[in-house]
Length: 365
Image (cartoon, rainbow, N blue to C red; front, side, top):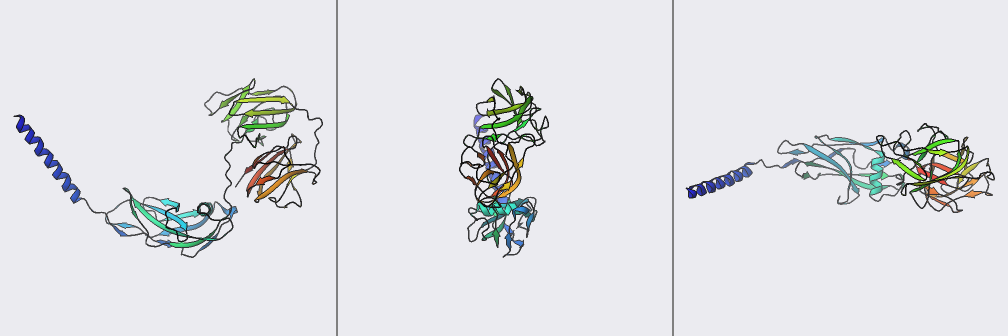
């Protein structure tokens, strides 16, 4: 009886293998019938990109359909490479699914691809573009043609991998409104975890928020210890108290979760009529200052809205003269030295404190 069972099991195994082999043999063979090809724009187009129109469509690409021997769902990829490149290090401009055969490319997308491929700002260079199709399982068709275009990119967005924190509370200029010209904290140029603000506070309380218009993330605290609130569902931390109207120096370390709050003697501080930026990176070069706006709440805090700066250097100076000037060694934030501040081309929102020379420059593009 056992032998009969063994023979039966062996027969079933052979039958299963035979059926699987037949299934494989009978599967439809997938072949490429027609490869996709870009139909617009035509080769030879010249694109001079404008930073002021970064979010606008710069070109609309269309292409012919990829055809296969079996009906399948097709994904397309629009690729760009340096002129004459083999597309090994190509950048993907866009992808579409469900057989869609057109895509609009924004100026900032084409600009970033050109920069990533080694393009130099404001220098024309040629690039090749092609379309490929892909279906589930990894079957990829290589386009039978490509187009060549010329691109003149602008300077890309300056990397800014820092967090900024703003004051909120009845002791501050904005009161308890979390999106009303809140005072920003000045970040150390050498330690991204340290923030400081030296200036006028009213009697009352305050906290620090990361994003204007939001109550989290937030820092509060008491007794020199910071308390962090990561989300709106987390407990609300205590507010830091200002005992009386006056000038104070507030400093916090978000890594050590500590803070200090000390009275500041501003009796000898000069109230400048004007403070401006000057230097090779500014619109007026080293010849004249670009005026900043003085705070009406704190006469030692100055701001400048979105301002275009070039590659170069800059400083802050008072009263359009060189009697009093401030600088720093580090981009974006720092202060306390007479050095020229290094600047990369971008648009910035600029903050300055004439009490301690602190500056903060946030790229905005």
